Amino acid sequence: MLALRLTRSAHPAVQARRLLVAAASAATGFLLLSTLGHALTHPEGSPGSLLRLAWCAVPLATTVHLALAVARTDPGTRPRPGLAAIGLGPARLMAVSATTTALSTLLGSMLALLVFLHLRGDLTGMPFDGAATDFLAADHPLPLPAALTLLSLVPATASASVALMLCPRDTLVAARRASGVLRARPPWGSAARPTAGAAPAGADGTGPAPDGTHAPDGTEPAPDGAADVPGRPPHPTALPWGAALLATGLAVEGYASRTSTAAALPLPTGLPTAPTAVLLGWSLTAIGLALAGPGLTHLCGRLLQTARPGALRLLAGRGLMQEAARIGSPLGVVCAVASGAYAVAALYDPADPSSGPLTTLGAAVVVCCTVATLLTTAVEARQARADTTAALLRLGAPGKTLRTAAVLRAAALLSLFTPLTLMVAELASLPLVR
Image (cartoon, rainbow, N blue to C red):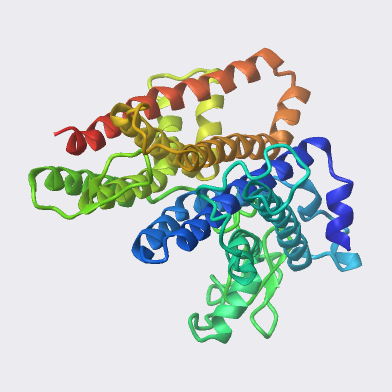
């Protein structure tokens, strides 16, 4: 009931983001149902149906990624002073956020089912009823349990991911200790001699943190700026791993282009058939770009502050370094999708009769979800630095300087990520053009 009230009384911008999640869930659910229609019309071709279902994992992942970004920017489920006194602590707010995400994705899944039944001709009396009977198995009875199982994938995955992402840190530590994964250890610095004026820790190993909060046994309070990005380090350290995966993926693609006997794996309709090793290389490069995104964003911030920086470059560079862990991964995912779209567009033939509306729908879901996730993360970053911006304005900083710093940050990111995306796209398309 609380999740319904928060959903109904939210700001129009928040409602728009939730409706965007519902639309992405509807499109992904329709793609999943279309695989069921293909399986009904081709009972002898189960490998092809399984392959279509496997390709739906890409739009499913981008939809869940968007749902996570929207859940982080939801102001109604953000911890605030005084809420814990009425029973709305971090764990309860996490459950509310997961429930809100489940409601949005369930709305999209139900919409997908209605559109699917309408295009099959099961629901009549509206325009375009039965317009897609040729590939939605209109002459076969629809197994309702299978359809509901497929439609539950997006809500279950999205709500579970939101719950895991927003789970309080002390709850995760307690769960790991209960399972024996994490051994209890004394708090950091407990063996050291206490300084004058320092409050002693309790007998059970708990004590007040430097900021006045009580940290759980064996844990340290999260540093400033880390608590608003659950599960992420304050400084990105995955750049070497991302670069290694990116280089490995490109090497795998280059090796596959030299092997003429490599096994081919068909892509969705309208896209070129590629060797399995090439698709594996594409996957590695995409993961590498997503992992390297925070490190590259952090590097942009450092480069902005080199060679005698002024106040403007210092402000822009420090802002990028602070937001690297938040906006870096969505930037890397957008670069991976853009490089894949560039490589496919170079080989795509619009006159090919095998191209269908489902391929266009799947590509649109992936592109729109990745771009919407990046924009939503930018909104989250703006909300996170709202106090800093207000403090600068109170100190007399002109608003033009803040806007110029934002433009400088965007230009620095474009100057690094645009050539990187084009280079990866060119190297990824070489194995298919040979």
